[in-house]
Image 1 (cartoon, rainbow, N blue to C red):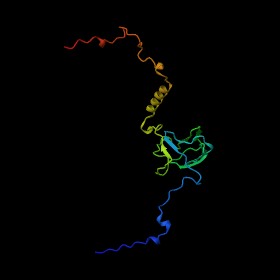
Image 2: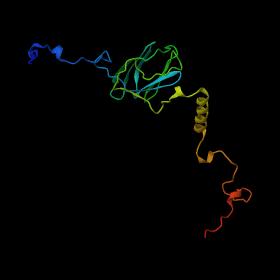
Image 3: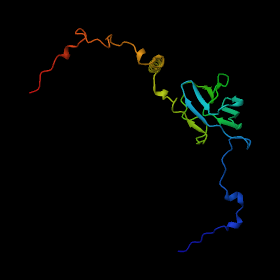
Image 4: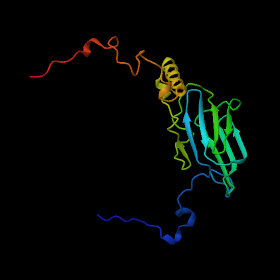
Length: 194
């Protein structure tokens, strides 16, 4: 049995048909570059940190389903612009940002608190400039409110403690004293082995 396969000659294809589809541009102007960003999820909010040192001309727009960021940063005055279609809706009136010399931290208040976000973006796409901030990430959806309260109290206690000299006296024992009164009953001398 013989089959025939018809192949279109290369010269009959237009250039448009041979090029792979392009990805959607993240910026509208060619002189803009996306800023590197890290994000993490919490019970009531999502945090995004745009890592741009010495940012100037900062513009942040919070929309119900989008977050827009632009600035000029660094000693080279590089123009940065990011636009993110968010995974879920946010409360744009309660969302805020804070600028430091090293970065810009955005607090995006969730429209539906208590609902975890498995990713920041609406589309399941890997963006080269966006990563998860594992230093601040907590798997809070499995924790009960009581456990979270206990963790927060423990964390506060640890943060308020200073060096070794500031440790509380847990059992009331003196560090330098070896009194007979403080000796345990099981501290008796052991018989020699035969």
